[in-house]
Image 1 (tube, rainbow, N blue to C red):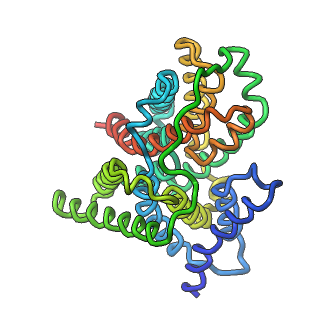
Image 2: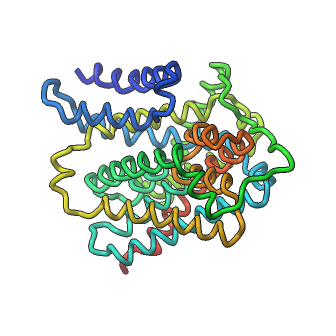
Length: 368
């Protein structure tokens, strides 16, 4: 039975991704959100018994493998060469996430593990779901806290994405100046093209080697499995590997990393219990809603102060809140293809810095 469950967890994300890509009616849906939904339906039914501990173990394994794969395609040198206001706007995204998370820690200090939640939310709102999971595992948050924070982020993220693809440009353009660009940005080194299976296989193997090195160094430095050390070393190795041109230009590494994130989303979804969420009085949903909303508002105010244009503000906000996967649909709604590459690049850099910022904020807020 466990073998069948494992096959299901690894095949279903492929089927969901294929279904979304092949149907124009489903293009606006996020495969990550769909994986969460399928997992939640599976986890809250009683007809087919499932091993939730097995699913959680797979979720914990999927994230470390995904992180290096996602980071391999990051081109930090190219990001620094983007238009000054693009880089500035993304820096403002990170600052806004940090400020809002610190404010939340001061206002909601009654929430259990509040300082850990702030660290996770800084990670996810500068990088993405892999950062949230990595920081949560590293800080050893309780299983309930990790699941509820992921759920709250998924719900709030869905609402914000709906806003981005509907009235965001019309409303924000009332405050910020219109977009203008004298030249098109350069293309990313690694695109969504499908690479050779040999190269992709090598990238996956390299990711596993990075995981092994991280675990080994943790054992050497601490004498045990310190997950925070493992995740930070893993992030550093992924970024370091991205500076090697041949590794960075392997096609499909980002997509492979996203696949493991879909596996994580599906398996974590099975551990989301609707009754527990309804009974929960932990305030985690309110905490998450405050951090996301406040971060977006602070970013908007800072964008107005620094004269960032509407499209750049929206696309860098998308990169920070969601990561690269949502850049395409949002850019399409903006009717501006010039912001796609800067958005993708900022999203990838967000993955690279999210863990560092998240752990730093959590340790800063940790009760003494």
